[in-house]
Length: 318
Image (tube, rainbow, N blue to C red):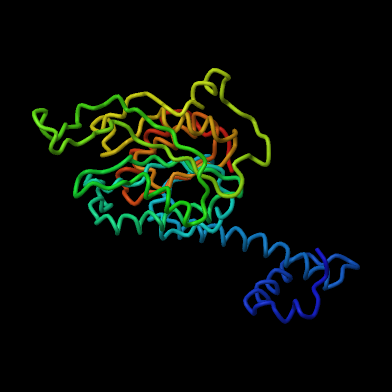
Protein backbone atom coordinates (compact mmCIF):
# COMPACT_ATOMS: atom_id res chain seq x y z
CA UNK A 1 0.00 0.00 0.00
CA UNK A 2 1.30 3.50 -0.86
CA UNK A 3 1.91 6.11 1.83
CA UNK A 4 -1.04 8.34 2.58
CA UNK A 5 -0.97 11.78 1.06
CA UNK A 6 -2.02 14.93 2.90
CA UNK A 7 -5.44 15.03 1.31
CA UNK A 8 -5.98 11.40 2.33
CA UNK A 9 -5.40 12.37 5.96
CA UNK A 10 -7.91 15.20 5.62
CA UNK A 11 -10.54 12.86 4.20
CA UNK A 12 -10.03 10.15 6.83
CA UNK A 13 -12.82 10.11 9.38
CA UNK A 14 -12.15 10.61 13.07
CA UNK A 15 -13.43 7.17 13.95
CA UNK A 16 -10.99 5.53 11.55
CA UNK A 17 -8.05 7.49 12.96
CA UNK A 18 -9.07 6.54 16.47
CA UNK A 19 -9.25 2.88 15.54
CA UNK A 20 -5.89 3.07 13.80
CA UNK A 21 -4.29 4.64 16.85
CA UNK A 22 -5.51 1.77 19.01
CA UNK A 23 -4.11 -0.73 16.54
CA UNK A 24 -0.73 1.02 16.45
CA UNK A 25 -0.42 0.59 20.20
CA UNK A 26 -0.95 -3.15 19.76
CA UNK A 27 1.64 -3.55 17.02
CA UNK A 28 5.20 -4.54 17.86
CA UNK A 29 7.43 -1.67 16.84
CA UNK A 30 10.23 -3.18 14.84
CA UNK A 31 13.59 -1.51 14.72
CA UNK A 32 13.96 0.85 11.82
CA UNK A 33 10.28 0.78 10.88
CA UNK A 34 8.87 4.28 10.50
CA UNK A 35 5.57 5.38 12.01
CA UNK A 36 4.32 6.05 8.49
CA UNK A 37 4.85 2.39 7.52
CA UNK A 38 3.14 1.21 10.69
CA UNK A 39 0.26 3.55 10.05
CA UNK A 40 -0.27 2.15 6.57
CA UNK A 41 -0.08 -1.43 7.85
CA UNK A 42 -2.68 -0.62 10.44
CA UNK A 43 -4.87 1.09 7.84
CA UNK A 44 -4.70 -1.94 5.57
CA UNK A 45 -5.71 -4.24 8.43
CA UNK A 46 -8.51 -1.93 9.47
CA UNK A 47 -9.94 -1.66 5.97
CA UNK A 48 -10.01 -5.46 5.63
CA UNK A 49 -12.06 -5.78 8.78
CA UNK A 50 -14.24 -2.84 7.75
CA UNK A 51 -15.08 -4.64 4.50
CA UNK A 52 -16.18 -7.69 6.51
CA UNK A 53 -18.33 -5.52 8.76
CA UNK A 54 -19.88 -3.78 5.75
CA UNK A 55 -20.64 -7.15 4.14
CA UNK A 56 -22.26 -8.37 7.35
CA UNK A 57 -24.32 -5.18 7.57
CA UNK A 58 -25.44 -5.57 3.95
CA UNK A 59 -26.55 -9.15 4.61
CA UNK A 60 -28.51 -8.04 7.67
CA UNK A 61 -30.27 -5.40 5.56
CA UNK A 62 -31.15 -8.06 3.03
CA UNK A 63 -32.73 -10.15 5.80
CA UNK A 64 -30.74 -13.27 4.98
CA UNK A 65 -32.82 -16.41 5.52
CA UNK A 66 -30.46 -19.14 4.30
CA UNK A 67 -26.91 -19.32 2.94
CA UNK A 68 -24.93 -22.50 2.35
CA UNK A 69 -22.20 -20.89 0.25
CA UNK A 70 -23.79 -21.76 -3.09
CA UNK A 71 -27.44 -20.88 -2.57
CA UNK A 72 -28.65 -17.76 -0.78
CA UNK A 73 -32.28 -17.07 0.17
CA UNK A 74 -33.52 -13.65 1.28
CA UNK A 75 -36.75 -13.06 3.18
CA UNK A 76 -37.58 -9.74 1.61
CA UNK A 77 -39.48 -7.78 -1.02
CA UNK A 78 -37.59 -7.84 -4.33
CA UNK A 79 -38.69 -4.29 -5.09
CA UNK A 80 -37.29 -2.98 -1.79
CA UNK A 81 -34.33 -5.17 -0.79
CA UNK A 82 -30.80 -3.77 -1.07
CA UNK A 83 -29.11 -5.73 -3.88
CA UNK A 84 -26.31 -3.31 -4.69
CA UNK A 85 -23.72 -6.09 -4.43
CA UNK A 86 -25.45 -7.89 -7.32
CA UNK A 87 -25.75 -4.88 -9.64
CA UNK A 88 -24.39 -5.76 -13.07
CA UNK A 89 -23.40 -9.29 -11.97
CA UNK A 90 -26.43 -11.51 -12.55
CA UNK A 91 -25.95 -13.86 -15.52
CA UNK A 92 -29.46 -15.27 -15.68
CA UNK A 93 -32.86 -14.52 -14.16
CA UNK A 94 -35.35 -17.39 -14.14
CA UNK A 95 -38.66 -16.60 -12.49
CA UNK A 96 -42.42 -16.79 -12.54
CA UNK A 97 -43.87 -13.58 -11.04
CA UNK A 98 -47.35 -13.41 -9.47
CA UNK A 99 -49.83 -13.80 -12.31
CA UNK A 100 -52.56 -11.43 -11.13
CA UNK A 101 -55.23 -14.05 -11.63
CA UNK A 102 -56.54 -14.13 -8.07
CA UNK A 103 -54.35 -16.93 -6.69
CA UNK A 104 -53.65 -16.96 -2.96
CA UNK A 105 -49.89 -16.43 -2.56
CA UNK A 106 -50.00 -15.93 1.20
CA UNK A 107 -48.50 -12.44 1.37
CA UNK A 108 -48.66 -11.14 -2.20
CA UNK A 109 -51.77 -9.47 -3.55
CA UNK A 110 -52.47 -11.40 -6.72
CA UNK A 111 -55.80 -9.68 -7.31
CA UNK A 112 -54.64 -6.13 -8.03
CA UNK A 113 -56.24 -4.14 -10.83
CA UNK A 114 -54.68 -4.69 -14.22
CA UNK A 115 -53.13 -1.22 -14.46
CA UNK A 116 -51.62 -1.69 -11.01
CA UNK A 117 -50.34 -5.09 -12.09
CA UNK A 118 -48.61 -3.49 -15.08
CA UNK A 119 -47.00 -0.86 -12.84
CA UNK A 120 -45.76 -3.65 -10.57
CA UNK A 121 -44.42 -5.48 -13.63
CA UNK A 122 -42.58 -2.41 -14.90
CA UNK A 123 -40.93 -1.93 -11.50
CA UNK A 124 -39.54 -5.45 -11.31
CA UNK A 125 -38.40 -5.33 -14.94
CA UNK A 126 -36.42 -2.16 -14.17
CA UNK A 127 -34.68 -3.99 -11.33
CA UNK A 128 -33.91 -6.86 -13.69
CA UNK A 129 -32.14 -4.42 -16.00
CA UNK A 130 -30.09 -2.95 -13.15
CA UNK A 131 -28.96 -6.32 -11.80
CA UNK A 132 -28.14 -8.07 -15.07
CA UNK A 133 -24.62 -8.26 -16.46
CA UNK A 134 -24.33 -6.67 -19.90
CA UNK A 135 -24.69 -10.13 -21.45
CA UNK A 136 -27.21 -11.26 -18.84
CA UNK A 137 -30.43 -12.99 -19.82
CA UNK A 138 -33.98 -13.40 -18.52
CA UNK A 139 -36.36 -16.36 -18.74
CA UNK A 140 -39.71 -14.92 -17.68
CA UNK A 141 -42.58 -17.37 -17.23
CA UNK A 142 -45.89 -15.53 -17.68
CA UNK A 143 -49.41 -16.35 -18.92
CA UNK A 144 -50.45 -15.72 -22.49
CA UNK A 145 -53.51 -13.83 -21.31
CA UNK A 146 -56.02 -13.67 -18.47
CA UNK A 147 -59.79 -13.95 -18.34
CA UNK A 148 -60.62 -13.36 -14.70
CA UNK A 149 -61.69 -9.78 -14.11
CA UNK A 150 -61.71 -8.99 -17.82
CA UNK A 151 -59.74 -10.35 -20.76
CA UNK A 152 -56.21 -8.92 -20.96
CA UNK A 153 -53.26 -9.60 -23.26
CA UNK A 154 -50.73 -10.19 -20.48
CA UNK A 155 -47.92 -11.56 -22.64
CA UNK A 156 -48.04 -8.75 -25.20
CA UNK A 157 -48.21 -6.06 -22.51
CA UNK A 158 -45.29 -7.47 -20.52
CA UNK A 159 -43.07 -7.67 -23.61
CA UNK A 160 -43.84 -4.01 -24.37
CA UNK A 161 -42.93 -3.02 -20.80
CA UNK A 162 -39.68 -4.98 -21.00
CA UNK A 163 -38.66 -3.00 -24.07
CA UNK A 164 -39.73 0.23 -22.38
CA UNK A 165 -37.29 -0.27 -19.48
CA UNK A 166 -34.40 -1.10 -21.81
CA UNK A 167 -34.46 -4.88 -21.98
CA UNK A 168 -34.18 -6.43 -25.43
CA UNK A 169 -36.43 -9.15 -26.78
CA UNK A 170 -34.87 -12.33 -28.14
CA UNK A 171 -37.63 -14.91 -28.52
CA UNK A 172 -40.46 -16.75 -26.78
CA UNK A 173 -40.81 -20.37 -25.78
CA UNK A 174 -44.36 -21.70 -25.70
CA UNK A 175 -44.81 -24.13 -22.83
CA UNK A 176 -47.63 -26.62 -23.39
CA UNK A 177 -48.56 -27.72 -19.88
CA UNK A 178 -50.67 -30.70 -21.01
CA UNK A 179 -52.93 -29.85 -18.09
CA UNK A 180 -56.34 -28.64 -19.18
CA UNK A 181 -58.40 -30.28 -16.45
CA UNK A 182 -58.78 -27.00 -14.57
CA UNK A 183 -59.66 -25.03 -17.69
CA UNK A 184 -63.32 -24.62 -18.58
CA UNK A 185 -64.76 -23.97 -22.02
CA UNK A 186 -66.97 -20.88 -22.18
CA UNK A 187 -69.83 -20.20 -24.53
CA UNK A 188 -72.34 -22.54 -26.10
CA UNK A 189 -71.56 -25.12 -28.75
CA UNK A 190 -75.03 -24.44 -30.06
CA UNK A 191 -74.24 -20.84 -30.93
CA UNK A 192 -71.37 -18.83 -32.37
CA UNK A 193 -72.51 -15.71 -30.57
CA UNK A 194 -69.62 -15.45 -28.09
CA UNK A 195 -67.18 -18.39 -27.99
CA UNK A 196 -64.06 -17.97 -25.84
CA UNK A 197 -60.73 -19.38 -26.98
CA UNK A 198 -58.72 -21.09 -24.23
CA UNK A 199 -55.03 -21.81 -24.82
CA UNK A 200 -53.61 -24.33 -22.30
CA UNK A 201 -50.13 -22.85 -22.63
CA UNK A 202 -47.83 -20.47 -20.81
CA UNK A 203 -45.04 -18.34 -22.21
CA UNK A 204 -41.34 -18.17 -21.37
CA UNK A 205 -40.15 -14.80 -22.65
CA UNK A 206 -36.43 -14.58 -23.42
CA UNK A 207 -34.94 -11.14 -22.78
CA UNK A 208 -31.42 -9.76 -22.44
CA UNK A 209 -29.66 -6.56 -21.43
CA UNK A 210 -27.10 -5.52 -24.06
CA UNK A 211 -25.64 -8.58 -25.78
CA UNK A 212 -27.42 -11.87 -26.35
CA UNK A 213 -24.15 -13.61 -27.16
CA UNK A 214 -22.10 -14.30 -24.05
CA UNK A 215 -18.82 -12.41 -23.89
CA UNK A 216 -17.02 -15.25 -22.15
CA UNK A 217 -17.01 -18.99 -22.64
CA UNK A 218 -17.67 -21.19 -19.64
CA UNK A 219 -18.36 -24.85 -19.04
CA UNK A 220 -21.69 -25.96 -20.43
CA UNK A 221 -23.74 -28.84 -19.05
CA UNK A 222 -26.16 -29.39 -21.92
CA UNK A 223 -25.99 -32.37 -24.26
CA UNK A 224 -26.27 -32.21 -28.03
CA UNK A 225 -29.65 -33.94 -27.93
CA UNK A 226 -30.98 -31.54 -25.30
CA UNK A 227 -29.75 -28.53 -27.28
CA UNK A 228 -31.47 -29.67 -30.46
CA UNK A 229 -34.74 -30.45 -28.67
CA UNK A 230 -34.86 -27.39 -26.41
CA UNK A 231 -34.01 -24.80 -29.06
CA UNK A 232 -37.34 -25.75 -30.61
CA UNK A 233 -39.68 -23.06 -29.32
CA UNK A 234 -42.43 -25.47 -28.22
CA UNK A 235 -41.83 -27.24 -24.91
CA UNK A 236 -44.27 -29.94 -23.83
CA UNK A 237 -44.27 -31.29 -20.29
CA UNK A 238 -46.84 -31.27 -17.47
CA UNK A 239 -47.21 -28.58 -14.87
CA UNK A 240 -46.54 -29.11 -11.16
CA UNK A 241 -49.08 -30.27 -8.61
CA UNK A 242 -49.96 -27.35 -6.34
CA UNK A 243 -50.99 -29.50 -3.39
CA UNK A 244 -47.86 -31.64 -3.57
CA UNK A 245 -45.55 -28.65 -3.03
CA UNK A 246 -47.77 -26.45 -0.92
CA UNK A 247 -47.49 -23.44 -3.24
CA UNK A 248 -50.34 -21.98 -5.34
CA UNK A 249 -48.38 -21.70 -8.58
CA UNK A 250 -45.23 -23.84 -8.60
CA UNK A 251 -43.56 -24.45 -11.91
CA UNK A 252 -42.10 -27.91 -12.55
CA UNK A 253 -38.38 -28.51 -12.05
CA UNK A 254 -38.09 -29.25 -15.76
CA UNK A 255 -38.65 -25.58 -16.60
CA UNK A 256 -35.70 -23.99 -14.72
CA UNK A 257 -33.52 -27.01 -15.48
CA UNK A 258 -33.93 -26.40 -19.20
CA UNK A 259 -33.53 -22.63 -18.93
CA UNK A 260 -30.41 -22.84 -16.78
CA UNK A 261 -28.77 -25.52 -18.91
CA UNK A 262 -29.57 -23.73 -22.15
CA UNK A 263 -28.77 -20.14 -21.18
CA UNK A 264 -25.95 -20.27 -18.60
CA UNK A 265 -22.60 -21.83 -17.73
CA UNK A 266 -21.45 -23.68 -14.63
CA UNK A 267 -20.64 -21.25 -11.84
CA UNK A 268 -22.91 -18.52 -13.23
CA UNK A 269 -25.08 -16.44 -10.92
CA UNK A 270 -28.80 -17.19 -11.28
CA UNK A 271 -31.48 -15.03 -9.64
CA UNK A 272 -35.11 -15.85 -8.90
CA UNK A 273 -36.72 -12.75 -7.35
CA UNK A 274 -40.03 -14.56 -6.70
CA UNK A 275 -38.52 -17.85 -5.61
CA UNK A 276 -41.58 -19.32 -3.88
CA UNK A 277 -41.01 -22.99 -3.07
CA UNK A 278 -37.46 -22.82 -4.41
CA UNK A 279 -37.65 -24.78 -7.66
CA UNK A 280 -35.13 -22.53 -9.43
CA UNK A 281 -32.69 -22.89 -6.53
CA UNK A 282 -33.06 -26.68 -6.61
CA UNK A 283 -32.12 -26.55 -10.30
CA UNK A 284 -29.11 -24.35 -9.45
CA UNK A 285 -27.94 -26.92 -6.91
CA UNK A 286 -28.28 -29.76 -9.39
CA UNK A 287 -26.51 -27.86 -12.18
CA UNK A 288 -23.65 -26.28 -10.20
CA UNK A 289 -24.77 -22.66 -10.44
CA UNK A 290 -24.75 -19.97 -7.77
CA UNK A 291 -28.27 -18.99 -6.82
CA UNK A 292 -30.04 -16.11 -5.10
CA UNK A 293 -33.72 -16.50 -4.32
CA UNK A 294 -35.98 -13.83 -2.82
CA UNK A 295 -39.46 -14.12 -1.39
CA UNK A 296 -41.57 -12.32 1.20
CA UNK A 297 -43.26 -15.47 2.49
CA UNK A 298 -41.34 -17.23 5.27
CA UNK A 299 -43.29 -20.47 4.90
CA UNK A 300 -42.37 -20.76 1.23
CA UNK A 301 -38.71 -20.16 2.05
CA UNK A 302 -38.81 -22.87 4.71
CA UNK A 303 -40.12 -25.21 2.04
CA UNK A 304 -37.39 -24.03 -0.34
CA UNK A 305 -34.65 -24.76 2.22
CA UNK A 306 -36.02 -28.25 2.79
CA UNK A 307 -36.03 -28.98 -0.94
CA UNK A 308 -32.52 -27.59 -1.46
CA UNK A 309 -31.09 -29.69 1.36
CA UNK A 310 -32.67 -32.82 -0.10
CA UNK A 311 -30.62 -32.46 -3.30
CA UNK A 312 -26.97 -32.56 -2.20
CA UNK A 313 -24.42 -30.56 -0.21
CA UNK A 314 -23.24 -27.23 -1.64
CA UNK A 315 -20.78 -27.80 -4.48
CA UNK A 316 -18.81 -24.58 -3.98
CA UNK A 317 -19.02 -21.16 -2.36
CA UNK A 318 -19.09 -17.68 -3.81
